[in-house]
Length: 299
Image (cartoon, rainbow, N blue to C red; front, top):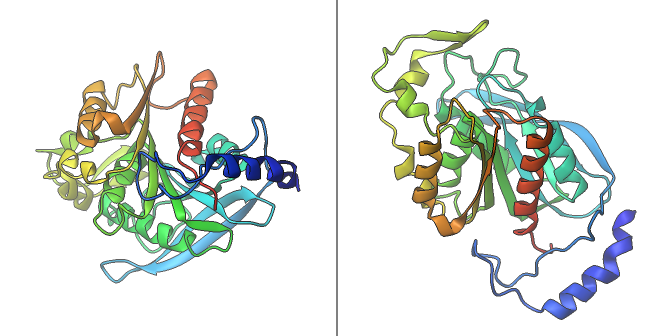
């Protein structure tokens, strides 16, 4: 019921603002930026959410995830959250809570086959690659846009590490780039092709109980992500720690160049590594939330 507290305020903002004419991301220029009172938080609820789709190899894939969203009826922008290597849908609790409390439908999900103990089904670790992850994400976008509480014109992508790498590739797809309102990433692992280039295409086990298959290695060895990701022409938020020992600064700088510096909101967190905790996590969450709110319009 809290939304009623700011209806008059929002109406006044609309009346004073008129039509929006300065959206950097494009495509929303005739809409008015949504403005919530400082400190306002929706009551939120969590719900498991699964959907099925058939991938490019004819496999039936079931994606499992969790939706965190405002309890109050209405249409809200959506954020899809993609985990990193050997990660799970549970990897972004602070982000889901913070974003949902500010009026976003958040969907965090398991990429199929991309971790030990994942809950999405239909593909094994031997079959998964960043490109099957792209298929999962593309299918998730289509599914989430159909939900009755989602404003299908405002779908944002968020990913961390390998999830950021996949997010960047997916947003640049010809039939997807105009559908995504904005992209946010923690330490996107755009180094993945370099890490596997020239390596033997054989299964390897970097973690106990989880392997990377030859199919994965073969799929990335000839990929130049920087020749692809710049096809996404809207705004991008990147948060990276200057002590990251996995994604070096050169990969972040090349991403900024590929997108165009004017479109990238880059935050470098001193002392943070490949994974945020404590005050670094607080900074990262608030930075992404600020980015989302600066690109969110009245439904």
